[in-house]
Image 1: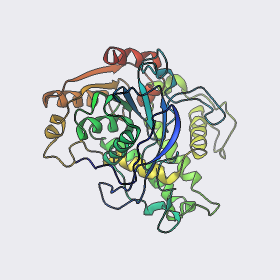
Image 2: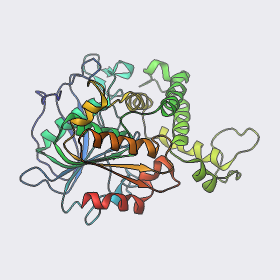
Image 3: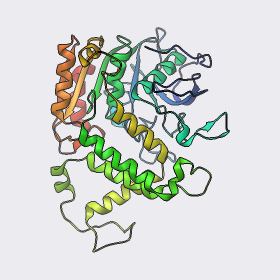
Image 4: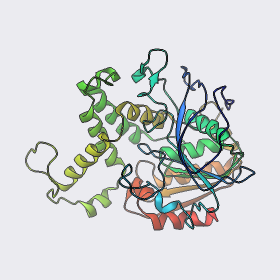
Length: 376
């Protein structure tokens, strides 16, 4: 069941730019209580008078609210989905009011484990309640009501964002006209679950993790988080794509870690990816968000998957990626078929790429071709 707006929620004008919205107290699905949650949100375009031209973009695991924009001092690489969002682009900001919020449990402005617990006036750390995909969606619904959005034209996102998109269709039937989960299914498979656990164990085994209470100590589990990122990066690429990009070539980047018998190019790439994440992400948020991704089951709380999918009233487009092994294309296609069998208007399309799971963040031309007929 959907949660009502909390007492702390407030109506706010929907203006382009980045802002922070308090949307009231929150009771997570699996228990616990958060006295007040705040969501960081960035918007583009203008909300119409009916409040129904809004598009919600939901980010991937270590993403944030900055989906669009050119490189800047704060965002060196620009918006993570910039080729998709803007005037005349597939998600046209001349037509839509586009919203992207950092998820509940995140570390880029939204309430998460690094936030201060008002009761203790210390960061929550591991005292922060477990959050689920459904919790993230319910919090986003509160944000939209605060912004004055009456209905969504589209919800779209990839990976854990794709899980949220699917949950939007199930949890709030008909609130979104169209929903596009990309590289996501109703439940992550055992291989993905196992890789997630390797990453979490790397963080928690780092002595600097300190049971999650590392804030303000001058020590944080950077090594563990870097290794978690390295393990994650291996799930986002395909074997054939790695042969083409790295092969067995010797490293060309400067060393970031002590060498042991030389270095291959793929090793240096992973070291740099690990170092980059440490500079912009909180280790505890990585634990919470990766666990939410693992725990997601579209059928949770219903008698069956069929009952869950039968709730869908939005037009759906499921997008698979041919070389994805985290959410294999065959499983994404099967999810679309289950939704269709349950009565949903569900379509399936596939991106043919060697870039694996990460294709929805790289292969812009292919992604636009896959989405354009549905968005139009």
